[in-house]
Image 1 (cartoon, helix red, strand yellow):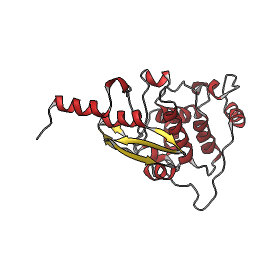
Image 2 (image 1 turned 90 degrees about the vertical axis):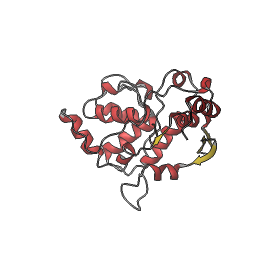
Image 3 (image 1 turned 30 degrees about the horizontal axis):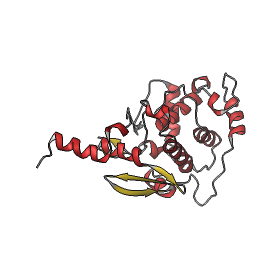
Image 4 (image 1 turned 90 degrees about the horizontal axis):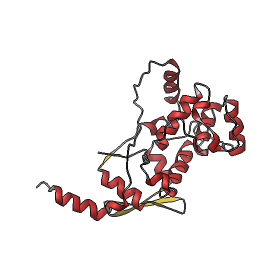
Length: 224
């Protein structure tokens, strides 16, 4: 028996009141495994990304009704470094290791300790060394479009896939650390850096920027 539109609306409203919903413009900026580009530099970037241990994170996806996405963002909060949320009115908890499994991210070199990425001061010096054309005193001063190619394309893809932001926006520290690890071919815990970015989005979901049309990006779920 098919549910009526009125009944479906009532069910959706019971999960998340319309006033508490966020505008979900897009999510899962998924990279196709057979993507090709007419731009030579961008094609090189795609080819290099395929060799990274976190490339599958750009491909993993699952269809879900949009109301469940709304319920996730309405209920999600961080507790003891884990994310607690509701899905279909049932409580769930996810931590770093589950996140790592979902995105199918494994260490680049098995049984080797992860290399700790540098903190902001050294990261800013690293970004400057990539040819950033403007002064950068803090991470928010970084403008992706002021980097030289191909680093501009790497940063733009990371930024868009994690944040849903246009390429000219600044990088967050965890995103810049991902770029640092790729550039230096370090065995960085990329799953942890992606997790940190995910935590950031949840902890800042109620800011004005997120309330006014930000495309909330969850790298493993998209509205059907």
